Amino acid sequence: MADASKMTALVTGASRGIGLAIARELAGVGYNLALVARSEEDLKRVSDEIASEFAVRVKPVVADLSSVDSYSYIVSETVSAFGGLDLLVNCAGLAQLGSFAEVSPAQWDAIFAVNAKAPFFICREALPYLEQSAKPIIINIASVVGFKGYINQSVYSSSKHALTGFTKVLAKEVQPFGIRVHLISPGGVATDMVRKMRPDIKAEELLQPEEVAEIVRFLVTRKGTGTIDQFYLRRYTSLAFD
Image 1 (cartoon, rainbow, N blue to C red):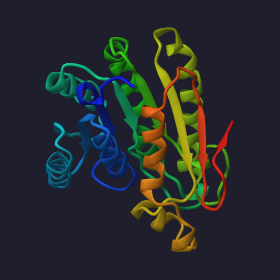
Image 2 (image 1 turned 90 degrees about the vertical axis):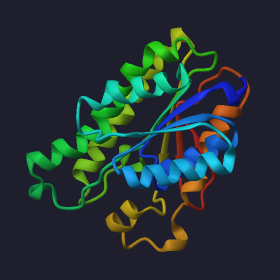
Image 3 (image 1 turned 180 degrees about the horizontal axis):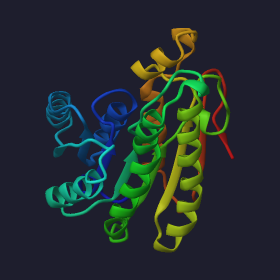
């Protein structure tokens, strides 16, 4: 791969869970990082920890992805800090647990804003800078619910279906620019969100955030130009490429 110490990754949802694990994994291979989250306190803490442990440059970017003003702000802050952008990881997400009949328009809008709308428009804002990169990559973190339906997860599932569909089209549209696009769709991962959504899943059956991050590391360090569009990752099964 190109020299990662001269490359920049932008990761949303980076203050905890899968996003934090991905940020740490990328720092481990030398990427400078722009980390996005809503909590300024949490973001500063993890940014300082990663910068100290891995000796990379880290730019915390406090932003609320439900705001349309955040899209250009996030990318411009990244480019201002590092001079460019090579890797975009859309990881931030919101979930909902409840009957379809109980969902309000406000709930639907809030979840779609973060899970589907924000990745769409952040990709659009990032495109001019990714086109200038020697090794441009976009990785969208979806979910198994983007392919399957689970009771009481109607809005969350719908939003991840939207992200999945968008990623498939995006991969084709940016292929002429040499931008690799990947979709990772994990099953249950040991995060606060999953524990609230699926308390019925035993802890030992959950994936760890670091296992998802290891897939990201593979994608950004492997040689070759072929594209693997979709990754499914579940406990006790082998990784399948479709």
